[in-house]
Length: 352
Image (cartoon, rainbow, N blue to C red; front, side, top):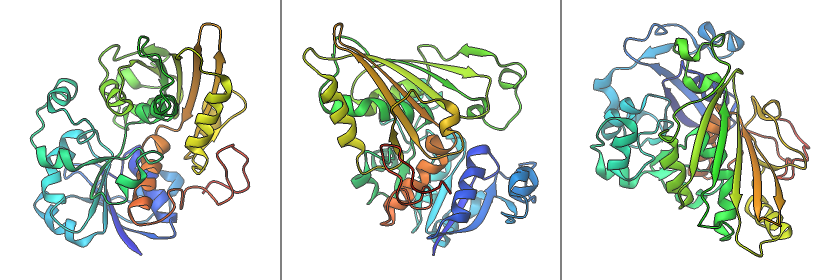
């Protein structure tokens, strides 16, 4: 078994990640860590997330920052479900041993240090590690992930957006004179577990935020290879993201070519389901899937694509496991979906 631990296990994404690893056929959930001053220290995951009561009984151990290098020798995989600042600070010690690092924070996603500082608010000082980090868009960067020792797991909004847009960009279908317009709505769990008035369920209605300045905009642009207009929204539901994307295509592109591009891109990727109806949040909540559907108007050349994911799973925990699967030589969907589920969405198995 591949020995794993999770740092930041008490948060929503960390807890979902622990549940996946606990049930995984090849990974051993060996330890769960929280910050040194966490109020959750000493409790079990089931104490703070009762749906896993008596299922995951490992204690939430306060991390000792002086032992990071030792941890890097004791585990095969370390998952970081930590704030960006913590991942950035700890990474030099964690990458010094045998452990492969799967970082769910944004600390190593953006390669341009100036852009990083503008959007994250602090200077990036780990230049060598930043250049080594592989972007873990698991359905697209399989070969790079297979040999990576540091994987920067994508953000939730970029995962939904890039999954929808990359088949179009790869085939040179996008009209470069018109920026893709991404309008995406996330559930309140995307703000994390810490209580705050602005993300309180009773305070949230439906509102745009981070307009023309959200940190996921440069991430989407960098890994699409084209600028975009990205507007996130906060919705009054717990989990999930629905991204509706409008693009202008090159003259002469046909509906048949669009369908072929998506089918070719995701033919061997059971995590991505090509739908025959518009997806909704309930279709993907608490699952590792990304559901896509589109409609094309050939007269003006505009295409509208909808992408639906669970922000905590495909947008975080389950994609991190996809990356770990690839890194250790397994099918990317191992432990996430049963065999027999196809990209067309015809389910012959069950979600774990």
